[in-house]
Image 1 (cartoon, one colour):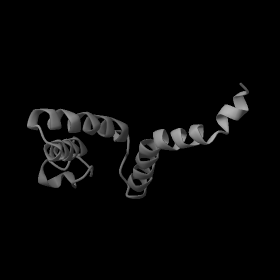
Image 2: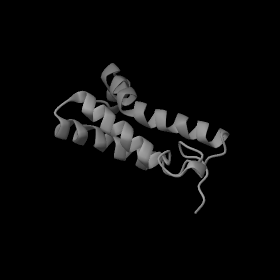
Image 3: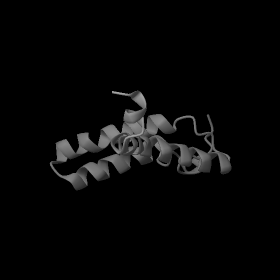
Length: 96
């Protein structure tokens, strides 16, 4: 089997797009962060922790809605929106 026939096959293309989509969304979020003056260094960690929090929350609450709520709570906690009032909300500047 020729390597080019595998790479140029529709299955390979669709699989590449399916796997690339979350990374592409994170890259677009980083571009928005940079435009807003926010350092996007923790974007991948936030994405991974919320991706874990959703199924864990769904397991413990026995519902899909509980998983979504748990993942959103994890997003708010890890992004800095749950900090003090002067945090700027949603990953804004923090006073360390």
